[in-house]
Image (cartoon, rainbow, N blue to C red; front, side, top):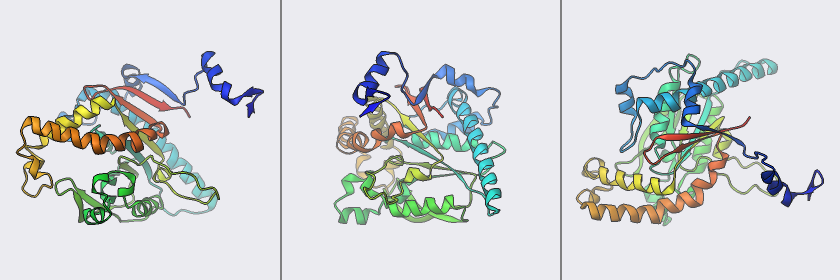
Length: 329
């Protein structure tokens, strides 16, 4: 097939040879992105920033100022624009039935720091006057219970797409997007490594942040054109937290070593049997789990979704973000 008289298989190589930028992203160094903060004030104290950190993760005031303040400024603009569009559409339709929450998806590998990034964004966005109510959920709560995973021989595939109750997650997001009140989501415990009987109630937030491994994944479109919803269909903006695989592996192993004296040490912990491992035994165990489960999931399911994100935060080996890729409008 030709495009403008040029064979399609020659179009991309020729464009690259001519210096044409075909990337859908704008690339920013840490310094360039930090300059986009403008006059956005720092609204978090040092104590609050410390409480947002995950195990073995770097989240300094400098990181908040250089990366998350500019991002919160951008997202506040996007949300304000979406709110205005929603009001205009409601006026056109002659309706005034409530608000439509702005949903942000946050994806990335195990141990890359998604939870810390999600908490930082939640804390900063809640300080903006047009988004005082910011909620956060993780898709861990929509994992099938261990009993079901065991019965289906899926315990070693936990975190893979087939281990989630996708129908329940889609119903939840549909109700949130429809502006329903008091929508419940299941709660996952990393101590007992299972879904619990607890529920978190999400009541018409201005913004909902949805954090999870596979939230940007899609399937093969149906030949008959029938609608098959994906989780990302409900997102207004999506973020992928990225890093070199070797760095993520190192962070995973270091976190595993640290957890021996904290979460693993609790008698009710699913991983209590690892609490007394020596450093060498723990390192070998962590590497085995990483290579047989998490690395496979990253390569097959998580990393391929990176290019679908609206924003990619690229981390260096010290857990600090040194590049930002923003999708062109």
